[in-house]
Amino acid sequence: MIYTVTLNPSLDYIVSTERINFDDINRTISEKMRFGGKGLNVSAVLAELGVQSVALGFKAGFTGEKLESLLSENGINAELIKLAQGETRINVKIRAGRELDFNARGAEISSADMELLYERLGALEEGDVLLLCGNAPNGAGEDAYAKILNMLKGKGILAFVDTSGNQLINSLAAHPFLIKPNEKELGELFGVEINGADKAAEYAKKLQADGAQNVLVSLGEKGAVLLCENGECHRIGAVKGSLVSSTGCGDSMLAGFAAGFLQTGDMEAALRLGTACAAATAFSQGLCTAEEINKALSLINENNI
View 1 (cartoon, helix red, strand yellow):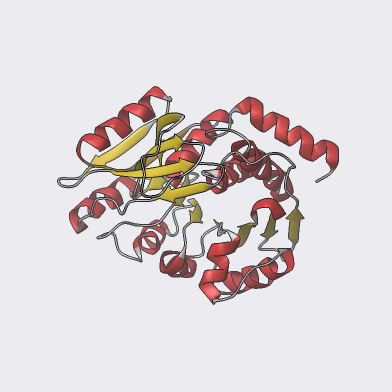
View 2 (cartoon, one colour; view 1 turned 90 degrees about the vertical axis):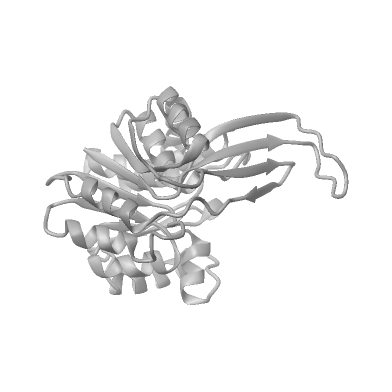
């Protein structure tokens, strides 16, 4: 079974307006509430690809109940641990020709809450796949993913990690199968600007040297770079199209890559499917659908991207 973990899920309130007027009332053109959080997005895209998963994480307060209902409505199998205090965060996404996002901090997680999650993850078995996605809220600690990976070491679990900062650095010693920083996150780790595939590959090698088996770096409109454990470096361009929203693109890429690799065992095929999923999400109002993924994948194959 595939499991995704989202320590800090959200409700995403997405509003569109013609322009933003400061010091005045702004009127929206449309509003939408959807579930958010990297692991939940991954589970949703996996479902579009016909791949079952279980979404693990936390919920809190009345917003947590709304989050759970949205997941159920969208056919996502979720097991969310209820926190005793706080509320599941609400992120505000403003679309006014450009994107303006306000991401809330989220409810604080206690050590007892984390122990419940560790206990659930301890039931994973050989052959299971685990995707650890997003940053951790207050209380979880900057070594939460490292603890999970070390706890599961030797059980034959295929682990993917998509996070940033110290949470990512701390996970490397546990040798995750694949990590997926984007170019901004990769640059921040080393205090440099990643301005293309060559630079991305250079610094991806440093993360490999620190323990990651494979490193996938998403480069937005410049495509992606995949540095493999066997020393191969695969590069792919981006699908041409009109950007609607970048929210969820990286999560879609991870979902597509994981599904592609599990189905074929081929890293290049996985990279193509991941790129197709990212493009399909970028060109749509929400997360990609199966039809949109297939269209983007056809463009990749036809144009030899």
